Image (cartoon, rainbow, N blue to C red; front, side, top):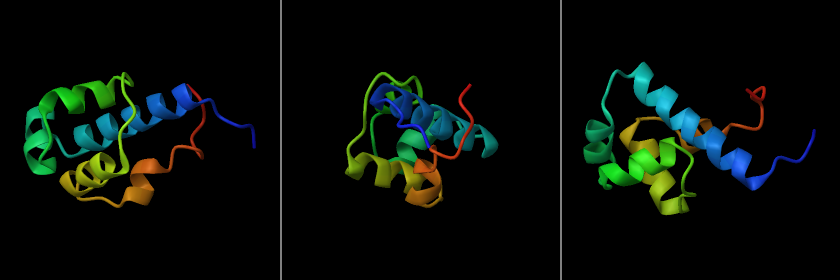
Length: 80
């Protein structure tokens, strides 16, 4: 398997968060409340403009009612 660049991984995680949120039909604001983090942080994560701490990713996975493993399982996806 080819080593992914950090920026690519950050982008993929953001897309995963956005897709999981869309599957649940919730807004960024609703996810922010469920995750107990700022809505701007959700926006920046989904757009790949920031890397998240483990603490933030745990909060987001909780807000999405999913496992951290599923949230971070971006290495098995095909590149867009």
